[in-house]
Image (cartoon, rainbow, N blue to C red):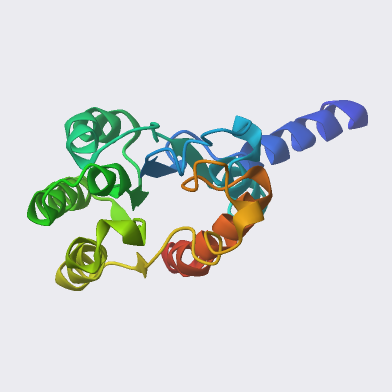
Length: 211
């Protein structure tokens, strides 16, 4: 028999090992977005994705957040980069937040929709679930473009039966002090608001999947 103190160490070690998710148990949550999710203009640790990672670690520790967002990314670029990320990380959940840069460049709405749909199909084919995060573009682009652009997200969510966050930065653009000087990107103080917007839709998905 082992001495009592040795048995205690062994039992403690077994407890720690069973409490830490194994590689097989690890669940990945991929954020696939643009500068709004890449902490543009602020420190990375202040961005909403890092805040999400911290909250996930506390409340759903089986999940790991991976931020694949790139400032300036378009739906074309996202579609091209996605297969490698899906192969490497095999995410169980993907927050898809793209389209804003396409809209700012006036890319045809149909092309944006086709690219977003392509990413949704790839994610679902890999076994992942999609949370679709919508974007609005400034009204100076005119309603003939801005309205169909935003409607894209609703129609895609309906077609593919996806949870939808209609506007990632809801409640922020109308408060000037929460926006950077470019009028497009939120400041650090706005990032917790973005997290709450996302969490409202994401938390039920996490609970449904089981923690």
